[in-house]
Image (tube, rainbow, N blue to C red; front, side):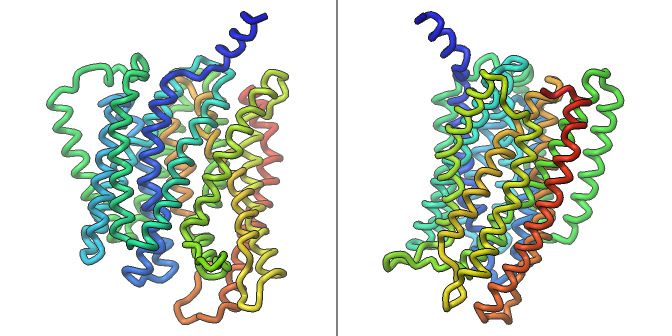
Length: 489
């Protein structure tokens, strides 16, 4: 009996490399989210930007931060290896955050810092997930629970950053909060060397080889060139439209080529993978509202007074990672239990359900705004908590399982590229488009009446929620056909 119990435990024991991926990702996400949570508030306070311009800057920055992993995935697979991508990414982001702490009076430093962070994210983002994916066998029953557990690292970093950024910025200002974010990123370098040995044998072929001086020089020049390019595009956001259109067209042409040249048994798997990436794209548009329209709604139309203390707006963002830390283990446990009984939902159903759940979260704010606003036209924090509960369930069903979906469906030779596509389309393009949806809630600078402001948000969130629900039902109608052609059970 003991042998059977031990065998069962070993069957679901996660590979050691999960510690390497887990701790480096916590530090990387900590620094990145310090910037992400503060960016809209920072540029409005420091550079007096309008809502729409602040949304556009956040959207372009975030889109580039998710676009570059498509290239980073290729570099990790074919040029420098995954572990070098992790190390160099942490260093670049750390330097960017530290530089950002000196940028208040020098706008060019602000854009250069963002460019460094974008380049660092591009190198880092897909590498830990790629290493983790390589540690599983085909149809490994540990995949969903493993990636759900790994997803906790992202949200632990996010949780710590929202609390630290909120408190530090409130008491010590913008400069110190960005500096703390940079120090957190450089702590990731320490964890890199502590857990590096657990990734032995999992890196790509080029990652196991000594890096020639020629390749190192090419990488230095490439990073320098990318920083200059991103700086130019961030300063001239109007050019970003053309950039994203071209990038999307190139990605589509590439995947059409892969579908045509692939063996028959791989074609439908690639199609199913791209379909779910598109569903993830729709869900991510909703997700990014948390950093833009929802964040400014909290700042303007939520009663943040609690026992004589005004809760910093950014601290509300900790609700998402708190709920993730609570519910990720529960979902992972449920996945394992349902898998043993052969009753687990397919990844197609989970991601589609995530889109619907995310759409419903906006109705919590609408109900609170329409029916339960106080005399000052502000709503209770209770409605924000309920909103972030649904928002988080959506996040877990989509964000946590996106890379697991790639692992399950994509041909192994396309792991890095498909993960890059998940970040390119499911995140980068979604971040860019999310600015358009956030613009529905723009409050002109001339409007200061809290009643009018609340009405603007109520109407905007109703539109976003209704659009999301309608699209969700269309997706559910298509799902059975995708499952059938790709033979997904």
